[in-house]
Length: 27
Image 1 (tube, rainbow, N blue to C red):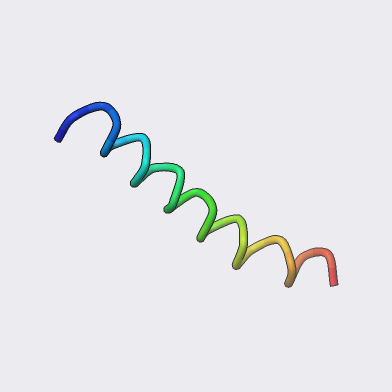
Image 2 (spheres, rainbow, N blue to C red):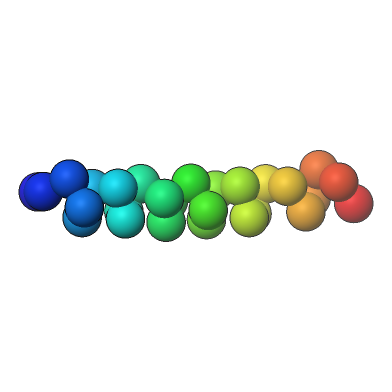
């Protein structure tokens, strides 16, 4: 896995985790 693909996957996973965690915590 090259750097670009890894960064893309990591950013997607981070966005998914934060996107599913923040709303339930803020509201």
